[in-house]
Image (cartoon, rainbow, N blue to C red; front, side):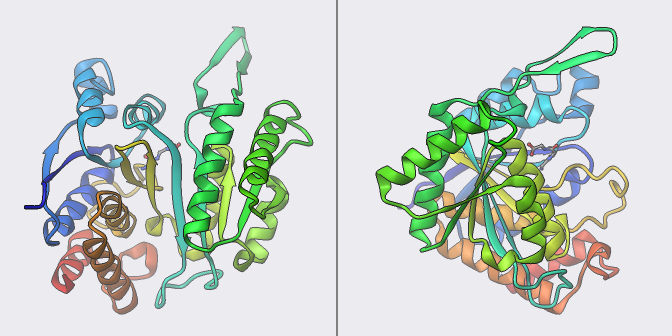
Amino acid sequence: MTATDDVLVIQGDGIGKEVVPAAVRVLEATDAPLRFAAASAGDAVAEERGTPLPQETRERAADADAVLFGAAGETAADVVLPLREAVGSYANVRPARAYPGVDAVKPETDLVIVRENTEGVYSGIESEITDGVTTLTRVVTESASRQIAEFGFEYAAERDASVTVAHKANVMRQTDGTFRDAVAAVAAERDAEYETMLMDAMATDMIQHPESYDVVITPNLAGDVLSDLAAGLVGGLGLLPSANVGSDGGMFEPVHGSAPDIAGEGIANPSATLLSGAMLLDHLGHETAAENVRSAVRSVLSDGPRTPDLGGDASTDAVTDAVVARL
Ligand code: GGG
């Protein structure tokens, strides 16, 4: 008998409340043995309970086989970063690929950002040292840099993909120097080939020649920014899923945020969250179900209906219905 996996569902803020239920419907339409439970986090929870991430949500995320997360609003730093820590994630995997039928600036784009997920400028060490003077401590350790390099090279080797490493060690000499040197050491131990690029130059080159990138290993903030840039190449943030992985657990979430400008209108593109659901299925070993979800999403992106961000006029529910119908 196949064991049932426990999935903790956290909608979060804004359109998270629309795209996450869509993804649960799609996951339920597969034959994967999943048991869903809900927990809360985010801006509204902060108002009600005085904290955006109740301890019980954090503990249940740590205990779950996987977490499906929607979007974080103003409280992002207090929600999404601790949840990633709770599930033991040190790698944030963000695939960006163009889909037939969807207008893309660069249809040849098919790359994956492998982003360090625990430190850098997202360490949360900020302060106001005097009126109008604020500081941020950027933490980069050899161990976390080695860990993401091991993950990224392994991920690339499994896919026979090339590796490019983004850094800015010519300016952030100590921190990105540590990152660059740790990646170089791991590559040498594995006898792996790779290229390095300064991350600002990479931003330009990725727009001009996205086809030259397969797997891109980055520090934390660089990965956040470059993946949004890659979203712009393929048709927008509504298309990019992500997996926060590392240890056994994992959290799967769209790359987009809470989109307060369209929240509540029922027109958010669910594709990024549905594709995050496919990554969740892969992580739990349900590869056939994952491929079925990807194929259904691809088919709907190609034939419609489409949400307004992709030039259509369909609702989140109509797109989800079409995906479910194909399953
Ligand atoms: N679902 C992604 C989300 O809520 N993003 C909001 C955000 O600001 N995230 C920062 C990050 O991904 O590190």
